[in-house]
Length: 391
Image 1 (cartoon, one colour):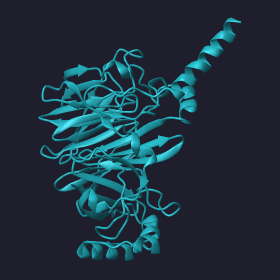
Image 2: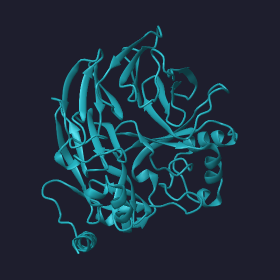
Image 3: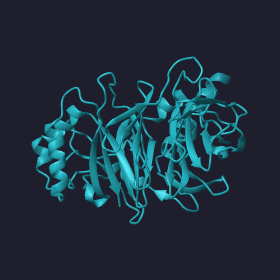
Image 4: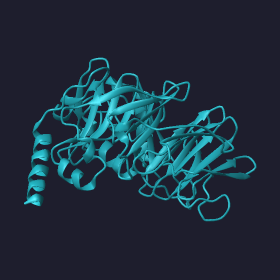
Protein backbone atom coordinates (compact mmCIF):
# COMPACT_ATOMS: atom_id res chain seq x y z
CA UNK A 1 0.00 0.00 0.00
CA UNK A 2 2.85 2.35 0.89
CA UNK A 3 4.52 1.78 -2.49
CA UNK A 4 1.16 2.23 -4.20
CA UNK A 5 0.70 5.67 -2.56
CA UNK A 6 4.19 6.65 -3.75
CA UNK A 7 3.28 5.71 -7.31
CA UNK A 8 0.06 7.77 -7.17
CA UNK A 9 1.99 10.75 -5.75
CA UNK A 10 4.57 10.55 -8.54
CA UNK A 11 1.87 10.40 -11.23
CA UNK A 12 0.01 13.37 -9.74
CA UNK A 13 3.23 15.37 -9.50
CA UNK A 14 4.03 14.81 -13.16
CA UNK A 15 0.42 15.63 -14.12
CA UNK A 16 0.60 18.88 -12.17
CA UNK A 17 3.87 19.84 -13.82
CA UNK A 18 2.30 19.11 -17.19
CA UNK A 19 -0.80 21.21 -16.70
CA UNK A 20 0.32 24.12 -14.52
CA UNK A 21 1.66 27.16 -16.29
CA UNK A 22 4.88 28.64 -15.03
CA UNK A 23 4.64 32.03 -13.40
CA UNK A 24 6.46 34.83 -15.17
CA UNK A 25 9.73 35.72 -13.44
CA UNK A 26 10.40 39.01 -11.68
CA UNK A 27 13.11 41.32 -12.97
CA UNK A 28 14.75 41.29 -16.41
CA UNK A 29 13.92 38.44 -18.76
CA UNK A 30 13.40 37.69 -22.45
CA UNK A 31 10.04 36.06 -23.16
CA UNK A 32 10.45 33.51 -25.98
CA UNK A 33 7.07 31.85 -25.40
CA UNK A 34 5.45 32.70 -28.75
CA UNK A 35 8.38 31.44 -30.79
CA UNK A 36 7.79 27.70 -30.62
CA UNK A 37 4.42 27.93 -32.41
CA UNK A 38 5.08 31.00 -34.57
CA UNK A 39 6.65 29.33 -37.61
CA UNK A 40 7.72 31.61 -40.44
CA UNK A 41 10.38 32.37 -43.05
CA UNK A 42 12.87 35.17 -42.34
CA UNK A 43 15.32 36.89 -44.71
CA UNK A 44 19.00 36.92 -43.79
CA UNK A 45 19.28 40.65 -44.56
CA UNK A 46 16.91 41.36 -41.66
CA UNK A 47 19.50 40.18 -39.13
CA UNK A 48 22.84 40.41 -40.97
CA UNK A 49 24.91 42.96 -42.88
CA UNK A 50 26.94 40.60 -45.06
CA UNK A 51 28.03 37.01 -45.59
CA UNK A 52 30.96 35.12 -47.07
CA UNK A 53 32.25 31.56 -47.55
CA UNK A 54 35.65 30.09 -46.70
CA UNK A 55 36.54 26.80 -48.37
CA UNK A 56 39.03 24.86 -46.27
CA UNK A 57 41.88 23.44 -48.37
CA UNK A 58 44.42 21.05 -46.84
CA UNK A 59 46.80 18.21 -47.79
CA UNK A 60 45.17 14.92 -48.81
CA UNK A 61 46.20 13.43 -45.47
CA UNK A 62 43.86 15.84 -43.65
CA UNK A 63 40.19 15.04 -44.12
CA UNK A 64 37.90 17.21 -42.03
CA UNK A 65 34.43 16.21 -40.82
CA UNK A 66 31.45 18.56 -40.53
CA UNK A 67 31.76 18.62 -36.72
CA UNK A 68 34.00 21.69 -36.57
CA UNK A 69 34.49 24.45 -34.03
CA UNK A 70 36.09 27.64 -35.42
CA UNK A 71 37.82 30.56 -33.68
CA UNK A 72 38.50 33.71 -35.69
CA UNK A 73 41.77 35.64 -35.37
CA UNK A 74 43.24 38.55 -37.34
CA UNK A 75 45.55 36.42 -39.49
CA UNK A 76 44.24 32.88 -39.17
CA UNK A 77 41.41 30.51 -38.28
CA UNK A 78 41.71 27.94 -35.50
CA UNK A 79 39.73 24.87 -36.60
CA UNK A 80 39.01 22.12 -34.09
CA UNK A 81 37.57 18.90 -35.52
CA UNK A 82 35.66 17.37 -32.63
CA UNK A 83 35.06 14.07 -34.45
CA UNK A 84 38.73 13.36 -35.23
CA UNK A 85 40.08 15.12 -32.12
CA UNK A 86 42.54 17.25 -34.08
CA UNK A 87 43.19 21.01 -34.32
CA UNK A 88 44.61 23.05 -37.21
CA UNK A 89 45.47 26.59 -38.24
CA UNK A 90 44.21 27.93 -41.59
CA UNK A 91 44.72 31.40 -43.00
CA UNK A 92 41.67 33.66 -43.38
CA UNK A 93 41.20 32.44 -46.95
CA UNK A 94 41.00 28.81 -45.82
CA UNK A 95 44.51 27.63 -46.76
CA UNK A 96 46.06 25.08 -44.40
CA UNK A 97 48.96 26.41 -42.28
CA UNK A 98 49.79 23.79 -39.64
CA UNK A 99 48.55 21.08 -37.31
CA UNK A 100 48.80 21.97 -33.63
CA UNK A 101 47.37 18.85 -32.01
CA UNK A 102 49.38 15.94 -30.65
CA UNK A 103 47.24 12.96 -29.73
CA UNK A 104 48.76 10.25 -27.56
CA UNK A 105 49.79 9.40 -24.01
CA UNK A 106 53.32 10.82 -24.05
CA UNK A 107 54.65 14.18 -22.82
CA UNK A 108 52.98 17.10 -24.57
CA UNK A 109 50.23 14.82 -25.95
CA UNK A 110 46.55 14.53 -25.08
CA UNK A 111 44.24 11.56 -24.64
CA UNK A 112 41.08 13.59 -25.28
CA UNK A 113 40.94 17.06 -26.83
CA UNK A 114 38.48 18.90 -24.59
CA UNK A 115 39.29 22.40 -25.88
CA UNK A 116 41.87 24.45 -27.76
CA UNK A 117 42.66 28.18 -27.88
CA UNK A 118 45.42 30.44 -29.23
CA UNK A 119 46.99 33.58 -27.76
CA UNK A 120 47.72 35.38 -31.02
CA UNK A 121 49.90 38.09 -29.48
CA UNK A 122 52.17 35.64 -27.65
CA UNK A 123 52.00 32.99 -30.40
CA UNK A 124 50.94 30.32 -27.93
CA UNK A 125 48.44 27.49 -28.30
CA UNK A 126 46.66 25.88 -25.36
CA UNK A 127 45.18 22.38 -25.49
CA UNK A 128 42.86 21.16 -22.74
CA UNK A 129 42.97 17.45 -21.91
CA UNK A 130 40.35 16.96 -19.20
CA UNK A 131 40.93 13.20 -19.13
CA UNK A 132 44.53 13.69 -17.96
CA UNK A 133 43.66 16.90 -16.04
CA UNK A 134 46.16 19.10 -17.83
CA UNK A 135 46.54 22.05 -20.17
CA UNK A 136 49.34 21.80 -22.74
CA UNK A 137 50.91 25.16 -23.58
CA UNK A 138 52.67 25.09 -26.98
CA UNK A 139 54.97 27.74 -28.42
CA UNK A 140 53.89 27.90 -32.06
CA UNK A 141 57.30 29.22 -33.15
CA UNK A 142 59.66 26.81 -31.41
CA UNK A 143 57.19 23.89 -30.96
CA UNK A 144 58.34 23.62 -27.32
CA UNK A 145 55.64 22.83 -24.76
CA UNK A 146 54.81 22.98 -21.07
CA UNK A 147 52.28 20.80 -19.28
CA UNK A 148 50.10 22.61 -16.73
CA UNK A 149 48.48 20.26 -14.24
CA UNK A 150 44.96 21.10 -13.03
CA UNK A 151 42.90 19.46 -10.26
CA UNK A 152 39.60 19.59 -12.17
CA UNK A 153 38.09 18.08 -15.32
CA UNK A 154 36.71 21.04 -17.32
CA UNK A 155 34.57 20.73 -20.44
CA UNK A 156 35.52 24.15 -21.81
CA UNK A 157 38.38 26.65 -21.81
CA UNK A 158 38.63 30.32 -22.71
CA UNK A 159 41.53 32.80 -22.76
CA UNK A 160 40.60 35.92 -20.81
CA UNK A 161 43.64 37.99 -21.84
CA UNK A 162 46.54 39.23 -19.73
CA UNK A 163 47.84 35.69 -19.35
CA UNK A 164 44.70 34.22 -17.77
CA UNK A 165 42.72 31.08 -18.62
CA UNK A 166 39.11 30.37 -17.71
CA UNK A 167 38.30 26.70 -17.08
CA UNK A 168 34.62 25.80 -16.95
CA UNK A 169 33.27 22.65 -15.27
CA UNK A 170 29.46 22.74 -15.39
CA UNK A 171 29.47 18.95 -15.61
CA UNK A 172 29.86 18.79 -11.84
CA UNK A 173 27.27 20.34 -9.57
CA UNK A 174 28.15 21.19 -5.97
CA UNK A 175 26.09 18.28 -4.66
CA UNK A 176 28.10 15.85 -6.77
CA UNK A 177 31.73 16.84 -6.14
CA UNK A 178 33.65 19.50 -4.24
CA UNK A 179 35.30 21.25 -7.17
CA UNK A 180 34.06 24.68 -8.29
CA UNK A 181 32.40 25.38 -11.64
CA UNK A 182 34.66 28.30 -12.56
CA UNK A 183 38.45 28.24 -12.32
CA UNK A 184 40.76 31.02 -13.46
CA UNK A 185 44.47 30.21 -13.72
CA UNK A 186 47.52 31.95 -15.15
CA UNK A 187 49.67 30.57 -17.95
CA UNK A 188 51.76 28.63 -15.43
CA UNK A 189 48.82 26.99 -13.65
CA UNK A 190 48.49 29.23 -10.59
CA UNK A 191 44.85 29.43 -9.45
CA UNK A 192 43.76 33.08 -9.48
CA UNK A 193 40.11 32.55 -8.57
CA UNK A 194 37.29 30.03 -8.37
CA UNK A 195 33.54 30.12 -7.81
CA UNK A 196 30.27 28.27 -8.36
CA UNK A 197 27.27 29.00 -10.51
CA UNK A 198 23.99 29.70 -8.64
CA UNK A 199 22.17 27.01 -6.66
CA UNK A 200 19.76 26.17 -9.47
CA UNK A 201 22.50 24.24 -11.25
CA UNK A 202 23.63 22.12 -8.30
CA UNK A 203 22.53 18.98 -10.12
CA UNK A 204 24.41 19.65 -13.37
CA UNK A 205 25.84 16.44 -14.85
CA UNK A 206 27.44 14.96 -17.96
CA UNK A 207 24.25 14.83 -20.05
CA UNK A 208 23.95 18.63 -19.90
CA UNK A 209 25.33 21.13 -22.42
CA UNK A 210 27.10 24.43 -21.85
CA UNK A 211 28.52 27.38 -23.76
CA UNK A 212 31.10 30.08 -23.09
CA UNK A 213 31.16 32.93 -25.60
CA UNK A 214 32.52 36.46 -25.81
CA UNK A 215 30.01 39.32 -25.77
CA UNK A 216 31.04 42.97 -25.45
CA UNK A 217 34.53 41.86 -24.38
CA UNK A 218 33.11 39.84 -21.49
CA UNK A 219 32.54 36.11 -21.17
CA UNK A 220 28.95 34.95 -21.18
CA UNK A 221 28.01 31.51 -19.90
CA UNK A 222 24.84 29.54 -20.60
CA UNK A 223 23.89 25.91 -19.94
CA UNK A 224 20.91 23.58 -20.24
CA UNK A 225 20.29 23.23 -16.50
CA UNK A 226 19.41 26.91 -16.13
CA UNK A 227 17.63 29.46 -18.28
CA UNK A 228 19.94 32.23 -17.06
CA UNK A 229 22.71 33.81 -19.11
CA UNK A 230 25.62 34.69 -16.82
CA UNK A 231 28.35 37.26 -17.36
CA UNK A 232 31.85 37.25 -15.94
CA UNK A 233 32.42 40.88 -14.96
CA UNK A 234 35.65 42.91 -14.73
CA UNK A 235 36.29 41.51 -11.23
CA UNK A 236 35.83 37.94 -12.51
CA UNK A 237 32.53 37.61 -10.65
CA UNK A 238 29.46 35.95 -12.14
CA UNK A 239 26.17 37.79 -12.46
CA UNK A 240 22.94 37.01 -14.30
CA UNK A 241 22.40 39.39 -17.25
CA UNK A 242 19.29 37.79 -18.77
CA UNK A 243 16.78 34.99 -18.33
CA UNK A 244 15.23 33.13 -21.27
CA UNK A 245 11.65 32.37 -20.30
CA UNK A 246 8.94 30.18 -21.83
CA UNK A 247 5.71 29.00 -20.21
CA UNK A 248 6.52 25.42 -21.29
CA UNK A 249 10.20 25.29 -20.36
CA UNK A 250 11.29 21.86 -19.17
CA UNK A 251 11.32 21.59 -15.34
CA UNK A 252 14.82 21.66 -13.85
CA UNK A 253 14.65 18.11 -12.50
CA UNK A 254 14.14 16.80 -16.03
CA UNK A 255 17.31 18.39 -17.36
CA UNK A 256 19.72 16.23 -15.39
CA UNK A 257 17.74 13.01 -14.99
CA UNK A 258 17.59 10.66 -17.97
CA UNK A 259 14.35 8.97 -16.94
CA UNK A 260 12.49 12.22 -16.28
CA UNK A 261 13.84 13.72 -19.49
CA UNK A 262 12.27 10.88 -21.48
CA UNK A 263 8.87 11.80 -20.00
CA UNK A 264 9.23 15.57 -20.10
CA UNK A 265 10.61 15.80 -23.64
CA UNK A 266 7.16 14.86 -24.97
CA UNK A 267 5.52 17.98 -23.55
CA UNK A 268 8.11 20.63 -22.74
CA UNK A 269 10.59 22.96 -24.43
CA UNK A 270 14.31 22.23 -23.96
CA UNK A 271 16.97 24.69 -25.13
CA UNK A 272 20.03 23.08 -26.74
CA UNK A 273 22.22 26.06 -27.67
CA UNK A 274 22.07 29.85 -27.58
CA UNK A 275 23.84 32.38 -29.85
CA UNK A 276 23.70 36.07 -28.98
CA UNK A 277 24.24 39.30 -30.94
CA UNK A 278 23.41 42.88 -30.00
CA UNK A 279 19.93 42.55 -31.46
CA UNK A 280 19.09 38.84 -31.45
CA UNK A 281 19.14 35.49 -29.71
CA UNK A 282 19.31 32.52 -32.09
CA UNK A 283 18.28 29.42 -30.15
CA UNK A 284 18.29 25.72 -31.03
CA UNK A 285 15.59 23.93 -29.08
CA UNK A 286 13.32 20.88 -28.89
CA UNK A 287 9.58 21.23 -28.25
CA UNK A 288 7.46 18.11 -27.86
CA UNK A 289 10.27 16.09 -29.49
CA UNK A 290 10.29 18.39 -32.54
CA UNK A 291 13.14 20.70 -33.49
CA UNK A 292 12.60 24.44 -33.01
CA UNK A 293 14.95 27.19 -34.23
CA UNK A 294 13.99 30.31 -32.34
CA UNK A 295 14.88 33.82 -33.47
CA UNK A 296 14.26 36.37 -30.71
CA UNK A 297 14.45 40.08 -31.52
CA UNK A 298 15.69 41.93 -28.42
CA UNK A 299 14.28 45.26 -29.61
CA UNK A 300 10.77 44.22 -30.68
CA UNK A 301 10.56 41.43 -28.06
CA UNK A 302 9.16 39.12 -30.73
CA UNK A 303 10.16 35.47 -31.15
CA UNK A 304 9.57 33.09 -34.05
CA UNK A 305 10.43 29.59 -35.20
CA UNK A 306 12.52 29.92 -38.37
CA UNK A 307 11.93 27.50 -41.23
CA UNK A 308 13.17 27.07 -44.82
CA UNK A 309 11.92 24.04 -46.76
CA UNK A 310 11.42 20.52 -45.44
CA UNK A 311 13.50 17.75 -47.05
CA UNK A 312 15.70 20.30 -48.83
CA UNK A 313 16.91 22.12 -45.71
CA UNK A 314 14.53 22.22 -42.78
CA UNK A 315 15.89 25.40 -41.20
CA UNK A 316 17.66 28.54 -42.35
CA UNK A 317 17.27 32.26 -42.94
CA UNK A 318 16.54 32.89 -46.62
CA UNK A 319 19.82 34.11 -48.07
CA UNK A 320 18.72 37.25 -49.87
CA UNK A 321 22.23 38.74 -49.46
CA UNK A 322 24.24 36.57 -51.89
CA UNK A 323 21.56 34.13 -53.05
CA UNK A 324 23.52 31.24 -51.59
CA UNK A 325 23.16 28.85 -48.69
CA UNK A 326 20.35 29.58 -46.20
CA UNK A 327 21.93 30.36 -42.86
CA UNK A 328 21.47 29.14 -39.31
CA UNK A 329 24.46 29.29 -36.91
CA UNK A 330 26.34 26.30 -35.56
CA UNK A 331 28.91 28.50 -33.82
CA UNK A 332 29.71 32.04 -32.72
CA UNK A 333 33.01 33.87 -33.16
CA UNK A 334 31.94 37.10 -31.45
CA UNK A 335 28.80 39.17 -30.98
CA UNK A 336 29.04 40.22 -34.64
CA UNK A 337 30.37 37.01 -36.23
CA UNK A 338 28.26 33.85 -36.49
CA UNK A 339 29.14 30.85 -38.63
CA UNK A 340 27.85 27.57 -39.96
CA UNK A 341 29.72 24.50 -41.21
CA UNK A 342 28.45 23.48 -44.65
CA UNK A 343 28.96 20.16 -46.38
CA UNK A 344 30.00 20.71 -50.06
CA UNK A 345 27.47 18.21 -51.41
CA UNK A 346 24.64 19.75 -49.39
CA UNK A 347 25.80 23.19 -50.54
CA UNK A 348 25.44 22.14 -54.20
CA UNK A 349 22.10 20.45 -53.61
CA UNK A 350 20.48 23.37 -51.79
CA UNK A 351 21.88 26.32 -53.75
CA UNK A 352 21.27 24.68 -57.15
CA UNK A 353 17.67 23.85 -56.29
CA UNK A 354 15.01 25.86 -58.12
CA UNK A 355 13.30 26.65 -54.80
CA UNK A 356 16.42 28.42 -53.50
CA UNK A 357 17.13 30.13 -56.79
CA UNK A 358 13.63 31.65 -56.84
CA UNK A 359 14.54 34.05 -54.02
CA UNK A 360 16.06 37.40 -55.15
CA UNK A 361 19.40 38.56 -53.72
CA UNK A 362 20.89 42.01 -53.04
CA UNK A 363 24.69 41.74 -53.38
CA UNK A 364 25.78 40.92 -56.94
CA UNK A 365 29.49 40.82 -56.07
CA UNK A 366 28.97 38.35 -53.25
CA UNK A 367 26.65 36.32 -55.47
CA UNK A 368 29.35 36.03 -58.14
CA UNK A 369 31.90 34.81 -55.57
CA UNK A 370 29.40 32.26 -54.31
CA UNK A 371 28.75 30.99 -57.84
CA UNK A 372 32.48 30.56 -58.52
CA UNK A 373 32.82 28.58 -55.30
CA UNK A 374 29.83 26.44 -56.20
CA UNK A 375 31.19 25.56 -59.64
CA UNK A 376 34.56 24.50 -58.23
CA UNK A 377 33.22 22.13 -55.55
CA UNK A 378 34.06 18.43 -55.59
CA UNK A 379 32.51 15.57 -53.69
CA UNK A 380 35.61 14.92 -51.56
CA UNK A 381 36.25 18.57 -50.66
CA UNK A 382 36.61 19.61 -47.03
CA UNK A 383 33.74 21.54 -45.41
CA UNK A 384 32.96 25.19 -46.11
CA UNK A 385 32.65 27.82 -43.38
CA UNK A 386 29.71 30.13 -43.99
CA UNK A 387 30.38 33.36 -42.09
CA UNK A 388 27.70 35.94 -41.38
CA UNK A 389 28.32 39.41 -39.94
CA UNK A 390 25.37 40.37 -37.76
CA UNK A 391 23.62 43.72 -37.48
